[in-house]
Length: 268
Image (cartoon, rainbow, N blue to C red; front, side, top):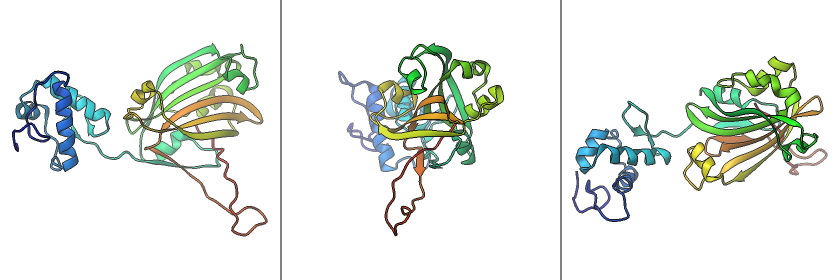
């Protein structure tokens, strides 16, 4: 078990005001993880209870925190194990692409949890689609999972006159554009997209299982069908799980002169 001085990795916790036992336990386990003490496997809950002389509730709370930090994989009914790096999904820019397809092509199952699906007005978004501020819009908010872990928080607005048939759609494992085409016959043929780095809100950190403060890609995009704006989308994508790649060429009429780079992919 090591020394019993209360130092990191000692197996002893010191009861003192203002520092909960679960937090002390998490700090100690974090130090041991950094040292590589668990290369042979992470101990079970009962083993930690015995080793540290704390309750099972204290152990579970400490493990929950380590899971939130991405250090452990913890699920009900299974022994905690060291987290493995998530697959990074690489996506070329400048083409019409499907995030759904990109995830599945990387060997990961892409699932979506629908958080909101309704009809509403939005005086900020409607003008971005060339509509009057009071125009009814379909609003879809999804948490998108890749391999069972959060990848993106996706928010989409469409004119209700176009998107209303999607109110009955099942988005648990499908592409929005596939559903739109099947329900309305309308394809997304082009788009304009801006990608920038942002710090998500505290609520978005929790939703995406990010340790604060973490950066994410903020994607703002207009989806277009034969020249007509059909959707406006704002998506937060975990920067540690997604990468945009571009092929660079010299500008026309020059030799080895860098050209401008425009990111205009669309995805569903």
